[in-house]
Image 1 (spheres, rainbow, N blue to C red):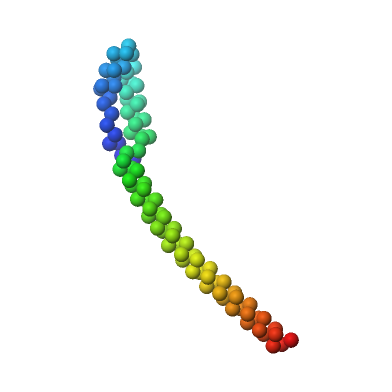
Image 2: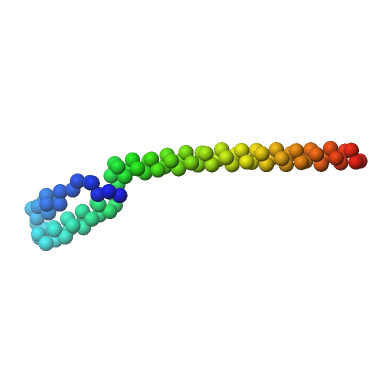
Length: 94
């Protein structure tokens, strides 16, 4: 994921300090929060790329299913033809 999410860590630290948190704690808290945002949150670009990948997989899956459908149809036709030939042969012999 890309880290293009805007987070003003300086303003965050200042707000924490104004609320009574020590500067050292506020800085550490802002660093951890920034890392979490960069590592865990998806950007619009991340979501766009994921949607594109899903669409490509969907297209590939549909193509594979059509190919499988055709192979199964051919196999079923061959089995039915073989069955008809066997039955016709048995009818002639008996």
